Length: 75
Image (cartoon, rainbow, N blue to C red; front, side, top):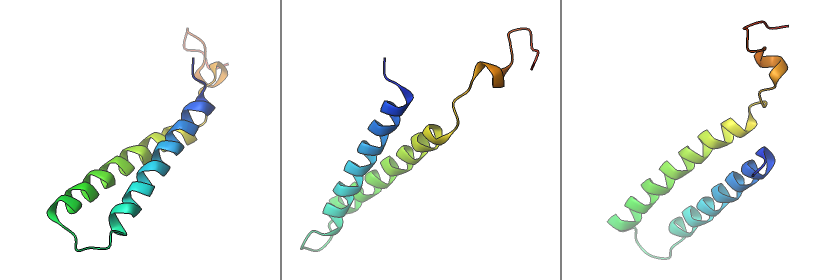
C-alpha cells in the first residue's frame, strides 16, 4: 500500500518531469510549429491536473475524530 506521503512525492516527481518537458519545448532552437503548440497545450493541461492532485495532497488527512463516529455524533 502506498502512503499519503509517498503518493504526494510521486505527484511532485511527475509534475517536475512535465515542467522539464515544457521547458524543453520552449527552449527548442527553431520556430514553433503547430505540433509544438499542440504539445504545449497538452502539457499545460497535464500541469493543471497535477495541480489538482497536489491540492488534494496538501489537504489535511481526514481523521476519525474529525469525521465523527458512525452514529453521526461529532464527539
